[in-house]
Structures are given as C-alpha cells and as structure tokens.
Image: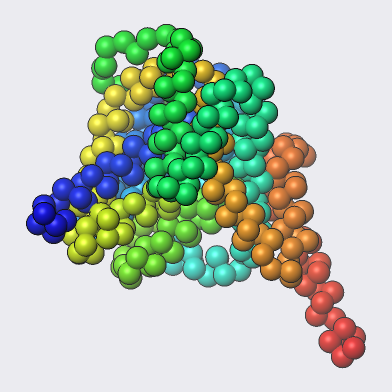
Length: 394
C-alpha cells in the first residue's frame, strides 16, 4: 500500500516524530537553564512553550496548508543557561517581552530579509556557535564520571548520524535511558499524571537585562531559527507564506505567554525537515497535516508538563548533559562551518566565537552581546581599511 493510499497517516506520524524529537533533545536545555527555579515555575515554562508551539503550529499549518512546525528557541534556551542564575526571574520575563517586541516590529515591518542581509552571516553564525559550544564541552567533560554510558551514547549518536540522521538524538536517548535503567541509575518517581496549571510571573524591566538577554535572544531567534527555518521551507518548494506572518504571529504568542515562562517561540528548522519531505507524504499539498499532528502532540505534552518534568528528573545529570551536547552538536558544526568558510571576515567571526564562548560579563552585559559587538567592530574596522583609496589604487 502506497503512502497516498493510506491518506494522512504518514504525515501524522512525521508530525508526532518531529515533536517527540524536540522533547528528546532541545527540552533538556530548558532543564539546565531552569536550575534553581521552583518546580512549579519550570512546569509552567514547559507548559507555555508547548501550548504556544502547538496552537501556532496548528493555526499556521491550517491557514496556509503548509507543514509549519513551531518550536521554542533552543539557542535562546542555551543563552539562558548562563544568564538566568544571575538574573531575577521576573526581570528575565521582562527581557523576554522586550526581545519578542523587537522580533514583532521586525516581522510587521517586513524588514527581516533586509536585516539578515546587513548582519554578516559569518558573525551571526559564530555567535550562535559560541553560545552553544559550552554544551559540547560539558558533554566531553562529563565522560570520566560515567564513561560506559556516555561513550555508548556518543557512539549511538555518530552511528545514527550515518544510518538515520533524523533519529540520531532519539537513539541517544534510548541508549542512555537503557544503560541507566540496567545499572539502577534511575531515581525518583513520575507519580500520577495530572494537568499542569500555568504560573503567572509579573514582568520587571531592567536595562542591563534587556541588553544582556533581550538583544542576543532576539538575534539568535532571527538568525538561528527563523532564517534557517524559512530557508528549509523554501528548499522544500513552499514559496508561501512569506516570513512576515510567521515571524509576527510567533512574536505575538511569545509576548502573550512570556509571563508564564515562555522565552520565545519561532519557526523550527531541523525537526521541521521531517515534515517537509516526501517521507511525510508524496503530495506536498497534503503534508500540512504533519504540522497539525505535531501541534496536537505539543498540546498533549504541554497539558501534562509537570509529568514530563518529573520524567526527566529521574534521569542522571550526566545523561542530560550528554543529550544536550549531542543534540546541539550538528548546530555547532554547521555554525562553525558557516562562520569560518570564507577567508574574508574570518577574523571577525573568530573574535565573535571566542568572546561568545568565553562566558565573560562586562558592565553587567553577557558574552553573547559582547561577542556580537566585538565581532562587528572587527568587521567594520577591516572593511574600512580595505576600502581606503590608497589601498584601492595600490
């Protein structure tokens, strides 16, 4: 029986798999960023990003008849790992709102494409790689504490990257959980599943937090999520919708859900590819059901966010660290490749990467912000020198 004869089933399965992979990989970064927060706030955070992703994915996929997969910002989550421990949560919520207001203005103005053309791709890619690089380092650093489990997980990941790249992270999760269970490393209990109630946090606004969190958060959302997400849609043959409605709708939903913990919703990039190809459905006009199915899956997981949180709490921290590092490994590799591909601009990209990865704080502002500033300064300096009249006539 062919895929077309089975109706919507392949597309529905593709949507469910794409959402499940989001929870198997990027969600663990949320747990790392949320260390120190009350469990109720963390559960509310998961509820907000899940419900927002689900509702947006369903609405946009139905409106445009295109498989539009919405997710939370994984690079943004990584940025918060270093920022949240130093920032009051209410102040962070205020920064989330400012970041998404900036994204909304860019979306409504139609300036997204123009902005991306002005920001050197090498520098934005280097900043993204710098933010995420620490997760790869933490994964390697955890190997001595649980060598058998982590080496098996790493082997499963790289074997999966060759055999079935889409499911490599799922293979890593299964491998890690299986070894942990066999060795008696699971702790705690999941308890009885119950619906999660969101928790309201009144936002507080602070200029330092806005610069340290909001600016990098907006930049990584636009460059690390929306840009590749739109590119993947176009590569799959979907010329519509334009970037404006997707960016704007995502920003509006992010602002509305920010007081409940949502740091940012955006167009998915890597998991979206699962829903966009012929494996989802041979007919491109029928693949939009994958976006709807993925959205419904988000709603189910979000409704039981506290149970999802309890489930991951039973896993050892070394497993979570390895899962996060391996899930982000392809993003770091692709970002570094983009950053250092061209000879021109390589110096600025390396400066951006080094500063962003350093974890430094200067004048109350974080390393991602300064990485972008220092990298652009080097880029502008070298561009001005290269354009000098005496150099042009030499």
